[in-house]
Image (cartoon, rainbow, N blue to C red; front, side, top):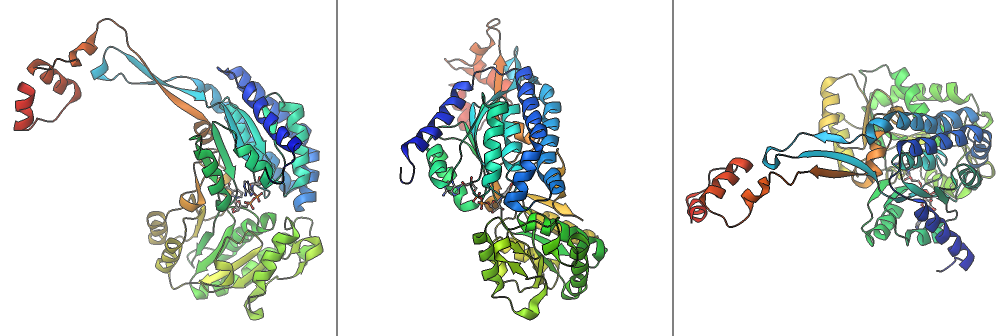
Length: 479
Ligand code: NAD
């Protein structure tokens, strides 16, 4: 394969074959719990290494590293461990009268060996949270951290080898390595990243009919009107947008509202940013960095197309520091930042006539990963709930739905396929096997065997609740 040395190919192949060989069924509750325990110990005992790597790769403050990465993973592990005994119990379903006597139930089985491919923006969480689900469901796994955050990838390699090397393989590298790993057969592929690569992953999985989960992104809009406390809303929007320097898949991408509301919102957003990061965010330890100079250049190129009078605040940058100030701009619906997901600390305020126009704008684009509505008006809330579709919907806040362990997390349409977190992870990484247990005596099944006649026809109708047959069918049945 182009660009991949034979040793690198062999490293990928052996990571996959080791994980495959490590899968043996059944996988007991005790084994699953023990693997989750080891994952938890790894996160706790290697926390300093992870936090240091996050600071180097993304300028992430250790507190933010805890709240949005390590703590999130620990909460997920704890929740999964709690769910597991219930999840593994065969779930009885009522007996079907037509099949009496018999008993039926559903039992969740592991899929086998799964592949987890992760991006760089939450490079610990987005490897370890899906992995926790995969292990809880009894699978072995191969994980592929992002090459864009090399310090985190290095810690993941050594930590996973030390704590879970018997059941988890790690493949490092970029496109050639990922292409190679995707040539292997897996029982599920879980990809987080952009939709272009999502399509590459789905095509590769199709050759084996391997199911995929695609956790993608897109533009997550905000609606705001004057029925809410604009100050609190500005604080919540600014926090959600500028966390991780805007590099969050569910970050508010742009804000729509009536023109006069957005005018009132502007100084409140400026004040909110100052509360979060001080007068000069470049000096704030709480403010993150753009992951690479290339990613920063994409943002500054777009900013070059924004007129100076449309910059409400921010715009300052320092390429060598990978710094871009929290930036708020005024934008038209078709402005330079309105084409693609921004994925950086630039927040366009987009005036629209009313919420109907906002719904129209949302529905004219791809289905978002998240939608945020700041309104106390029941009609407005009902309109966004009923007339739009998105992965998640949050009323009165942004981002926080991710922290609820009982809510599914995933997209719809262009923002993704499938869900995870808690029981949704268990569903994603398990097969619900249908089991029916029917004694051989009495042999009730013979009532439906040929040859057919009037008695069997009547019995079949009673058993299966068939509607009265038409004259033609009746004639046929009574033949
Ligand atoms: P990325 O560049 O790190 O890519 C993700 C993974 O895909 C990496 O492991 C990378 O090596 C691999 N990859 C890249 N190109 C490939 C190719 N041609 N073939 C095979 N593999 C390839 O991350 P990214 O895509 O820049 O991440 C940002 C995107 O991810 C945004 O759109 C964001 O919204 C989305 N995202 C979604 C979620 C979610 O949970 N839904 C979370 C985070 C990010």
